Image (cartoon, rainbow, N blue to C red; front, side, top):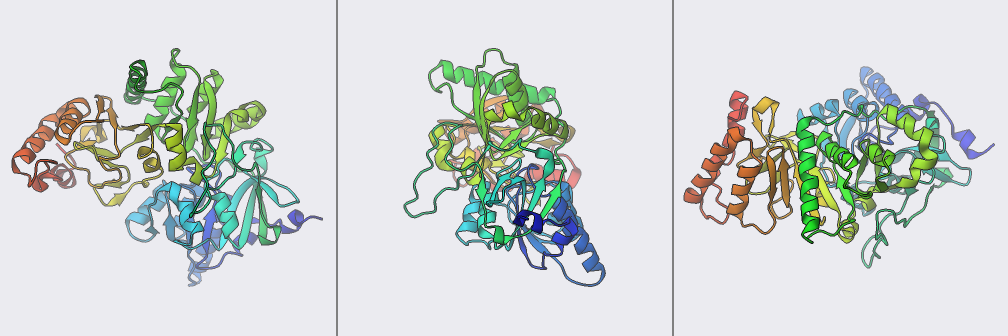
Length: 495
């Protein structure tokens, strides 16, 4: 009888091992590879303890967002004290915005470093989904890398969730390196998207394992939706611009791509799959979305490197069935490596991320609605935007049927300053901001990216700033900076 057999138990039994005040470091990144059975059991236990008047809350660290059976269940059970570094769950978002759960929004590439250097508390318990466990202490992670290696190393106690549905489909995909810590840290020897610098498996101390829980659940990823016309428009504009830059010798061919999360980012990958002029491409990204599968099936995918393979249930089934051949095209890394500024800069990544809103001066808001209400978080977009060779921020020009303009006089929260942005794209057009002073940037953004309904007011704000701002290097009149946001809060419309 091996230690694996003796540590097996039910999710409910594993949940009994969690104490009030524990810091849980869980696997998972953007709805891929997170534990599903144990968090549900912890939420059920929290409900019972609360009914009997006992206090029970934990801190939850992950890689990024997890599924509803983790983030959502724990939030609804009032079992979370603090969450970090990213989320996308409606129940959790509501609790963050009403103040009942504290939330720290952080750059995803820095989270592991913060834990490993002691800047934030190390997990007291790591709960990690794996696809295989070996008697010698090796485990194979499942559909994400995230911060799993960090949490497995730092936590004194480990609970493993063995996803039996995955079989050997994930074996061979993972590259489990972590960057060295300073001082005198050696660089990661990654010079192309497919380079490997770590181990296929994670070696853990079996003595730290307090429970092994089997599950066969799917990652709770929403089904893939074909891009709408606006998203297709944006995707086609990006590809046209890249071809233009390549034809003029300003952009080398063969650079790897990073694509953010969402339907607009998906549209870019779909446009690549449908473009007969485009050859084989590599991805060096965070999230490998389902839109990469058409590229794979059409023979256009070289290597997709990321820290999560985020697929709908139907695509998860298809991947397991075809994994022997398909997984040769994938490398799943720890997020400190997938989001490493050093590697991103060395590879010359072409970066594409979604914005909530942009302003006429080139700043981007990725995280907060009207400056205070958390949507999801900054994610890893800044890791790529500041260090990429070519960076795009994408957004439809309007939202809520035109009631909201995505182009505003000044963003209500700054996630990416004008120093770190290069190109804005909406369905109205594309604004290449590189090498332009502030006023020229503003006029180009208004002309090419703003919806026609909002161009006159945005131009009026700019002209007013040129006349009345304290200085005209950045002609922003503070009295008018948030007038469109204020009007929306008062009337429900920015117009």
